[in-house]
Image (tube, rainbow, N blue to C red; front, side, top):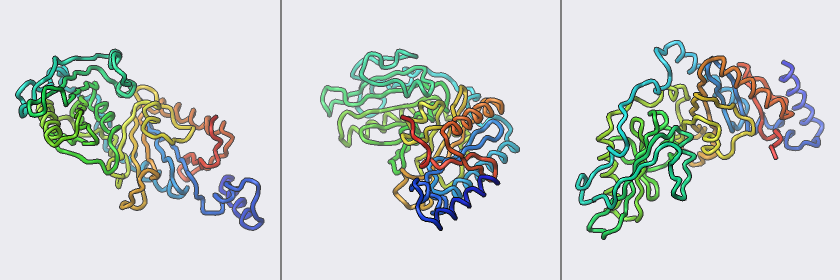
Length: 350
């Protein structure tokens, strides 16, 4: 009640007596709680919230949708809302590499090679950090060539064993973006630039074409289909995704297991965000008022993080709340007890 009364008084003061020194705060307060709102709350083993909401009212409305989904799922759930516990048959990635003559006239231009654990990409100018953030275990790769394109490698196939279907789903969706083009190869695959990427089961597959040509693109799709056919149908997408509100921006769903990965996904997050701890799992998606709008980059983000138990979620929420208080900001308190912060008036870290 104290926060609400203070807010009303501040609105009356700034609207009746002119502009005080802190102009941005006045404009926010005089314009119906407009701003860049964050909302965070804890429910059971979950911490959920909203980033980049245009108004406090919109943030609160979204929060009510999420907590309703969480409570309904808790009552109906017959098991965990993750799929890590589902045992998947482990096939070494090198055994999934198509051999000579398995698709069109393409053949391997060299013997396959592999990486395992921390050795990934140590001998090349490529960063392995993203793969490690999603639980990478083993990779196999090989290049292909075809007579009609000369005797040089033109396609690189990489197969990553990510340990679980969730990890493979997460790193695949890291590359997905709204309005991307897809191809069905036995699994939904994204075609972007010179790459074709998809996940199936515990595997993430990345195929790179070194040159742009119709024949090369057709071969990349043929390779993808050959690989996908060797992998047994995976379980459904992680059930935690069902807790997100409907009407997501298509192609905006993300999965993350660490704060490092989260900040690789979103470059403009608030200074203070809940801290994930192993084996926490987070999902997120973008939402916009106008479904036909192309400006999805500024759309509201909804996130849900599932911790190992209620105690772990409570600890993470307490740390988050304390960090917000230390930022010298008096946060609002929502109808459901959620912490609401207008990021436009939060001091930025140096």
